[in-house]
Amino acid sequence: MIDAQRPRGTDRRGFLRIAAAGGAAGLVAACGWDGGNSVRPSLLSLSRVNDWVGENILFSPTRLAKTYSPAERSRMLPSYFISDVMPALQNPSAWRFKVDGLVRTPLSLSLDDLTAMPRVTYTVKHHCVEGWSAIATWHGTPVSAIVARCQPQPAARYIMLRSFDSDYSNGWDLASALHPQTILAYGMNDNPLPPAHGAPLRLYSPTKLGYKMTKYLLSMTFMDTRPGGYWEDQGYPWFAGI
Amino acid sequence: MISSGLQIYEAYARFGDKGGPMFVSPFDGTQFPHWSRLGGWLAAGLNWHFALMWPLVTVGLLYLFYLIGSGEWKALLFRPRDVRPAIEMAKYYLRLRKDHPPQGKHNPLQKLAYSGIVVTGVLAVLTGVSIYKPLQFSWLTALFGGFQAARYWHFWIVWIFIGFTITHVFLVFFVDPASLRAMITGWYRGRFPSHD
Image (cartoon, rainbow over all chains, first blue to last red; front, side, top):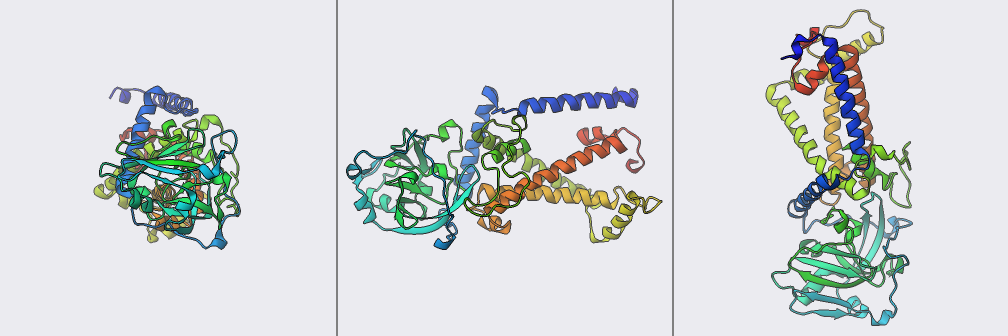
């Protein structure tokens, strides 16, 4: 109302001043800002809302990822671990994969035990949170086959996966773990799982981003509370379903 | 949204499967300056991006509902019958024609721009969804030519938006500065023939 009395030139200058201040503030704000202590918690809460939407509305327990022919495999698939040197077992023959927590029958499985279980092979596209993707073939036993043997208690809702790659771990929702393409992989591209990709055993699933697929596995623990994870605790989305 | 998107882009600044052919892009391997990236690192960039998608989609839907509900869409939608007048309008701007062709509230080139930017906005969201959930929306990802192609289009749409915004605001200052306030507040207090 007051503005209407003023000459237009002042208005325009006023606007330019506000626009410049707004623009400068925007640039300062954009400068590597993760939200600070005031906004970061809200961003993480919203990330949990997005997890909920991804888990309860968008995720389909039966929709299968597109499979490719072995000829379409990428020439390379980057490998990551968080340890300074490639994690390796001191005594591979003594390694056992432990299944415990809220289960009726805890399990301790050797690699031979695992390869004797139902076997799944597929060639799928891997999606990394960084934005790259690559196609590879994976061989393993479905997590659902483990679940059939260990018989989780009704309260079990989550799975925590532990590794011997320093303190790397992940938490999974049971529904994604029971997806038919979620497997404990002991083979890659027609060969035993290479050390660079998590030997002797890693989780694989085309339903989630790469960082959810724990390598160098030691154990899976059935839980009624949501486990954290190496990257998830630092702010990466927990559900990470794609 | 754009700023956090540039932060996410930093993690894999190219388009194409690992070990395979890459899409041609002048920004291949480009690291955008630190000040232009919201988040500081990938996780925070993602969290900003996935938080801001809610207001973006909400405001976008409110705008579309308003256009439809108020009937304003009729003045903005570029239709086949606008093609010939658009050519006449372009001739006028290129000084191939002396007199300003008759027009309604917006001239046909403006309609083309305003219809085009709505389509671009819808595509920005759809390509985003297709790379956010490429398994659950695999049909959409396939429609854009696959995961890496969808990333490619999602990235390029940003430059269309930036180009549109710069042109749009430049023309406002150049032609009718008073309408800048109208764009922000919704009230127009200047004097301009086409707004009377």
